[in-house]
Image (tube, rainbow, N blue to C red; front, side, top):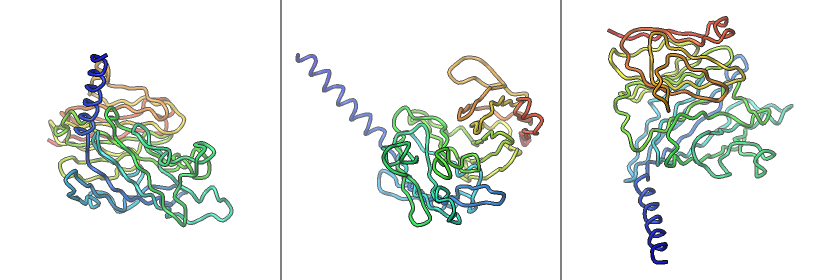
Length: 300
């Protein structure tokens, strides 16, 4: 019996130790959901402050575009961090369709309680978790141990339970592992493959600046720098992402690849050393016809 109790106490102590080690920063974020031309919608960064474990505060709002972007702002955190996002509805209300007057953020991959699921009451059986024309909504996430990865976030409320993710309300959350430094990664390229185009966002890890790249963008990197690609699929089609004249390790294997099949809401993340200019494309037949490709330009 004493052995069992000793093991239980050891397990409890280990759990407390892990939690204390993983106690991270608090990311306080304010975002708008706005209407764009052509019937599209987009998230816009309004405010971003990081509260350190010592209580110090760092405002990084200026690192983001002051316009609504597709994809939405890339949020980069580390295992152990907490995120608090206040979403504000900045769209003209639709008096004929009340379902249009609610917007949300539903995230994949990290932990949250039932108040932060970002879905409708008839799905979560709790309440509509939406920002509306008259009130904002706050979502809280926890990047617990084991949640490292690249995860989509998107609307799950506007017009229907599927939301307006197919009309621009989507973005990426990158959770870096607490156990590994990412200082060698100079740039992050988030590429969302939708059914008729590739849309991108760049993060410069040296300056911290986030730059919207828009449709089928040209990607740039310094020679011999390590860059990380985050490829996410959105929509209903399957895709075949290819980076010409480069190979990389397929995560979870020892295989070297230069093409990856990816389906709806799947993602593929890999790192290459930028040694030469090239191009990327979606080689699926319909995507080739639509011209879903772009250049990867490496500076000499």
